[in-house]
Length: 291
Image: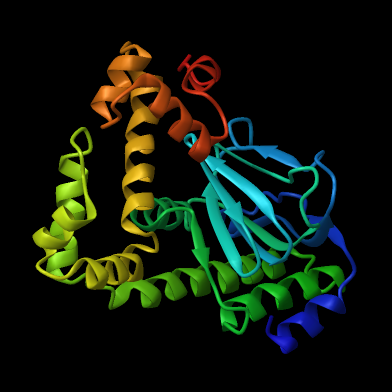
């Protein structure tokens, strides 16, 4: 953990700042409903974005400890130097799991149509979870805004709007710069495209390496570099993601969904589904039937 960031954060009290919404029309899309710095050690910490107020763009960063994020049936374990972004409402929940190391976080929630489209686009393109080194300036900016809020220096609608724009536009710039030069090598992209088009078929490492035009060792290393996942884990997440959509929006039974997602048996599919989502396919379907 970056010592300068840690020093700034440790100088803050734990807490949750809430700002009262104002009625100044030209500033309504530059608003911070909540920000804070807290240490979580109770399973009572559990946010479900299905019922969250609409129009919010959430940023949360982990200083230390462990939390969970579950989005559209896929479970993510959040550890030190991981951030996640979400919008509300959404099929998402984040929470502290009893028995985990205390979850030390900072967070800023923005509200308004200025930032919401960018957050949604980033989530769609890159997923909700990202690793950000603690030395990055975007985190120092977030910590500074939270410090200023605790110190009572962010009060008026204009001050709140300035803080919202300072963090929101800085984060958008950070994301644009982060991925601006991310041009996946053509061989790896071919393998990704093949995986996504053939999830119901058996997929092997030698097969994908051959499609990419390199050795299995080089392919496995490069694939993880560009997707953040080993090939097997990437394929599993893609298959379970497809299964989530079928469970929610189709009337296929579990055996049919298992086959459609490349699993040889319903039992094997159920084990893989639980490994990724922490629930069985039937439990997930019963909890997520669209209204």
